[in-house]
Length: 76
View 1 (cartoon, one colour):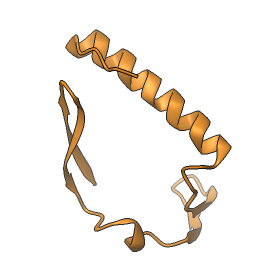
View 2: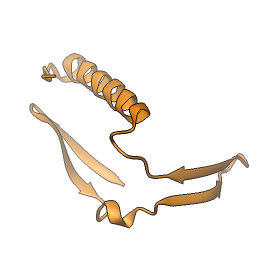
View 3: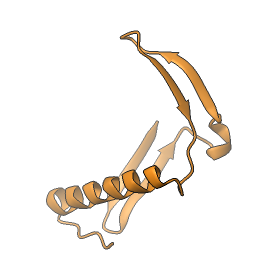
View 4: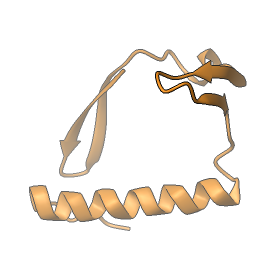
């Protein structure tokens, strides 16, 4: 669980139940959800091209939301 606060300079994490990256297993799975679907999870590196793409898209979406909802201009 994570609690975050939106500030004029970005996002401030105020609480997390994770003590750090070393507490997250390298791989988890299989996990069966309520619908019976099976999922596997694994840690990925920030320098992975797919990760870079999605981090950029996430940042763009957050910046648009901050600009619209909070009138906060987030620099690139």
